[in-house]
Image 1 (spheres, one colour):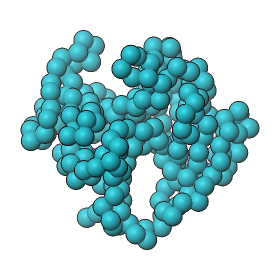
Image 2 (cartoon, one colour):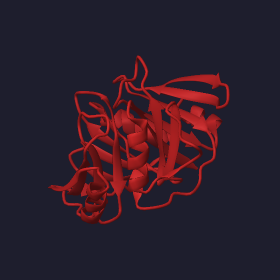
Image 3 (tube, rainbow, N blue to C red):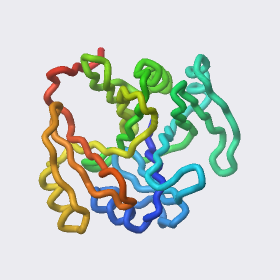
Image 4 (spheres, one colour):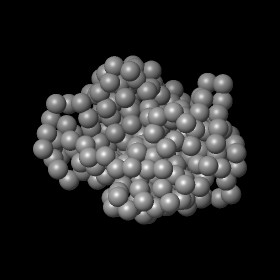
Length: 232
């Protein structure tokens, strides 16, 4: 079992708490300015900014039921293992692009609601990212015919998009299986300006970022597979 947790660093935690709830996430415990978690389809964690992680930075964390299995499956990749108090063994996976993701054991509730976390992993080598996520145990659901995009699904909640890009990094994003136009209206009425855009692959929604900077993306569930396919 695997759950995707999107860790977002913010200087506006209370604003993000409100946005998370409007999106359909439920707080897991009492939120604090240092750290808070929200659950829907996958987990959204909000972390205070640090010297190395300014507002808007995003980490990908995977919660698994068997760290030993994952460590063995990732033996051909650059992986470090250390013990963290209160967490247990944590695997840190370093991609050649400099993107880092972490893996730790834990239990999570089944996915709920219409919104899933979907951090986007940008890097030139899509095949490397695909190999890492497949080894961990995620399933490729949709891929672009030109090799520039692969969408991975975790069986216990959340997904990850891998996007070919010369500029490597991780961006905050979400996936919705609901009515984007209605969701945009509700968010706008709640004080979070949002609008829907028609893309070549479907529809997406843009939300004003509580931390400023680039808008937050919510992709609609993709139904038109022209130029895409479902990997076997």
